Image (cartoon, rainbow, N blue to C red; front, side, top):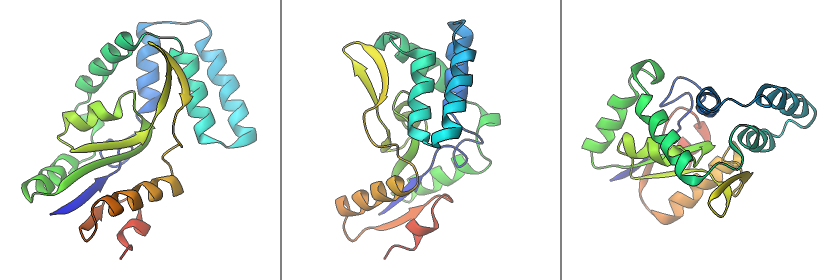
Length: 183
């Protein structure tokens, strides 16, 4: 058995998934403050270059305060709508090869737990590791509840996986040469 770690955006899917997820919400739940909020959050990002802060702000602008059941329904629609045009060529075949070989499949993404675990289930992954989002009771807060699983944090997550599966060979999708170089 090996542990096969796949990234989501740009590896399983052809593009970022957070922005389409939020825009799909906006289309079905229009808010006049959405576009001005996005413009303001984007301008602030140019000052700070903090991807986690931007992610949190965009989620709060689009969906902050939404009930858990409404988020779950939106997520189900979003994940079911992912089709061949959204997926990278060969991604599903690679997943199938690893599954047939008995590998443990892990989807590791900087994208958020509002939908990454659902995508992982849809495509047969054994687990998902992703950026966690905070809730206030039954309402979406939108703050990050974990570090943004990006860059060095993503590598730290792989090291945590290696500690959970000592002596197991790892293979990683194209996003991390440093992961493949690990002993």
